[in-house]
Structure formats: C-alpha cells, structure tokens
Amino acid sequence: MNTNPLGADTHSVSPGSTTSRVWLVAALAHTCEPTDRPAVRDDLMRTWVPEPGSGYRTRDGRRRATWAQLHSRFDLVEVTP
Image 1: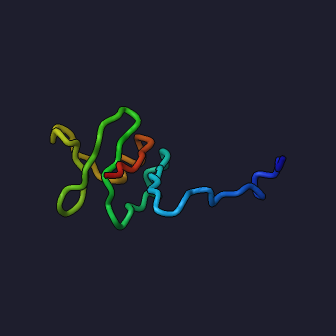
Image 2: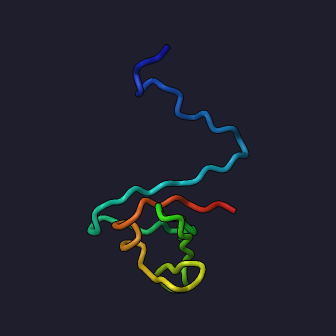
C-alpha cells in the first residue's frame, strides 16, 4: 500500500478514453480562458456554450457571461460529446 500521494500512479487513464477537465472557482484576476473554448457545465447543472467572438451563453440563450465571470462564480466541468 502506497500512502505517499506523490508516488501514486497518476496515469491510470486507458488509451482512447476521454476525460473531462475541471476548473474550480478562482479569483477574477487570474482566469485565463482555455484556447479551445470548451462547452462547460456549472455546479448548478447549466450548460454554457461559447459564443462567436468572446463570451459564453446558456443553451437556452437566457444568460450570458465571460469566461472570467463563469470561472470566478462556479466550479466548471468540461462537457464532452
């Protein structure tokens, strides 16, 4: 049994599988938007999709926000197809 977390196997994902990235709430000043602009789901289960240009909107179009606003308010999980 390995009790050292630094010695634990961190490469247990099998080849060909997809994993989702996670962004935890962070300060507004240090929020770099991912270059691939993925669709994400917030901790209220709303899905946000990138808009042309900059910004994100909910799938129903009722809410809009920048990446910095999303990242500073919600934990985010990448939505994979």
